[in-house]
Figure 1 (cartoon, rainbow, N blue to C red):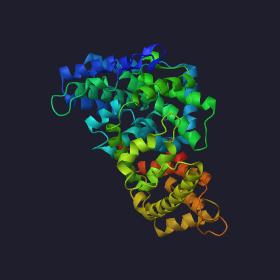
Figure 2 (tube, helix red, strand yellow; figure 1 turned 90 degrees about the vertical axis):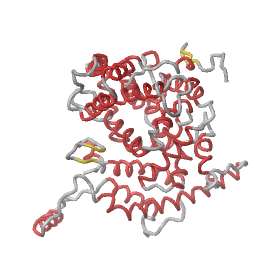
Figure 3 (spheres, rainbow, N blue to C red; figure 1 turned 60 degrees about the vertical axis):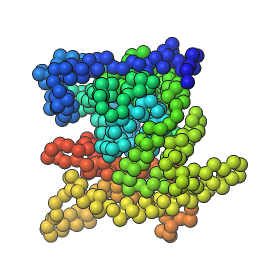
Figure 4 (cartoon, rainbow, N blue to C red; figure 1 turned 135 degrees about the vertical axis):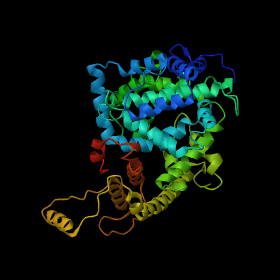
Amino acid sequence: MENNSTEFEWNGIDLESLRKVMDQPADDAVQAVFESHSMNHLREILIQMAENDSAISSAYPQPMQDLVKSELTLAFTPHDIKMFEQTHHIWKKHGMNFIFILFFRALPYTYMAEKPANVLKMTKLLTEHPERRIFETAQFVFDVMDKDWWKPHKRGILTALKIRIMHAAMRHALLNSRDGEKWNPVWGNPISQEDLIATNQVFSLEFFKGMAMMGEELTQEEQEAWFHTWKTIGKIMGVQEDLITENVADAWDLQHKVYGHLFKDETVAGILLTEALVKTLHHFHFPTPLILLMMRKLLADEQFSDCFERMLGPTYRRDYPEIFAKPETHEERAQHEEVLRGHFHKHLGAYYSTIKEKRDGILKDKPDAKPKLGFIQKLILWIKGLFGSSPDKKHLIDHHIDFLHTILHHKTTGKPVEKLEEDMILESMKKFGGIMVGILSLHFRKGKQSGFRIPENLKEIWSLT
C-alpha cells in the first residue's frame, strides 16, 4: 500500500526511505573481505573475535581493520560508565526475568515485522537452526551485560562487532544471491537502519514492558540507565546517530512509529519464525500449552491486540482452541480467564513434575561438577554441616524447583493447592527465566572455551556453581 502522508515519519525521517539505508562501514569492510579473500576468511575473523584472543589480524583488508579498531578505541565518559555500572546491577537482579521476557514477549512480538522477518526465514537461521539462534542471542546479552563489558579485556564490544559483521555478511549474501529465493526489493534492504534501531530498542523497551506486566516495574532511573547502555551498544552495532534518542519516552515514540510501519504488512514469515521459537523452547522442557498460555499473557498489547492470535493462531489454534477463544461479553471473558487459569495450573504442575524428574539428567553434565568423594571426605563435610557450614550449595534449577513447589502446595499441609490466583501465576512465571538460564549454563566446554559462557562472578551470584 502506497503511503504519501507523514504517518510513517519520525523526527523528519521517512521510515520507508530508511528501509534502504544499511550500515556503510560494516558493508564496506565485508565487501573488502569478499574481494580480497573468501568466505573462509570471514569465518576466521568471526571465530577470532568470538575467542577474543586478538581483535583482528593485520592480514585482513584495511576497511575491516579500521571498523574494528574504531569501535575498540571508543572513549566513554564518567556518565556513560556510571550508567553501565547501574545497568549491570539491574542485570544481576533482573537478568533472569530479562531472558524470559526476551523469548516469551520480545521475539514473538517483533516477528510481526514481516519485512525483516524475511531475513531470518531466507537465511534459515531460526527455522533450521533454532537452538543455535537462541544460544547466540542469549550469549550476546550475557556478554554485553557483563561487568566492565566495554573494557578491552572483556568480550562485550567484540561480541557486538561480531554480530554487526555477521549482519553485513548476511546483507551481502542476500543481495548477491544467484541461487534460491531472491530478496524482494519491495522489502527495502535487509537489516536496514529501521530494523537495527527497532531491534536495539527492543532490548530495552520490551524488557520494561514485560517487567511491568509481571508486576515488577523498573523505576524511571533504572529504565534510563538501562536504555543508555543499550543505545550505546546500538551505536557500536551500526545504528546511525540521528536514530539514537535522548531518553526512554522519545525511544517509545520512535518505536511505536516503527511498529506501526512494519506491523501493517500481512504476516507470513513471522508465523514460521514464531513456530520455530515455540519448538526451540521445548529444549527447556516447556510443554506447548504452557508456552502458549505464557505468551498469551505477555503478548497482550494495547497497540496490537491481535498479536497472539496473529502470530500463533495459524499454527496452534486447531489443537488448542480454548486458548485462542474470543468470548464476547465481560462475563464470558471473566469465565474464560478462570478456565485458562485452571489450564495454567494443570500444565504448571506437569512442568514442575517434569523438571523434578529430569533434574538429575539435566545437571549430570554440569561443567564444574565435583568429583565423587571418598568416605573420609564425606565424613568431614558431614561434621562441617553439624556446625552450620553448608558446602553443597543448591544449583539455580534446584532453587526454582523448590519455589514452584511452594506455589503449587499449601505451606501448612503440604497438599496441592486447589487453584492458582493471578498473582501466583505471575510469581511462577518469574522463575522460568531462572530455569532457562540454569539449563543454558550447562552448555559450556571448559577445555575448548566453547559453548555458552556465563561470567564466573554471575555464576556465584545466580547459584550456577
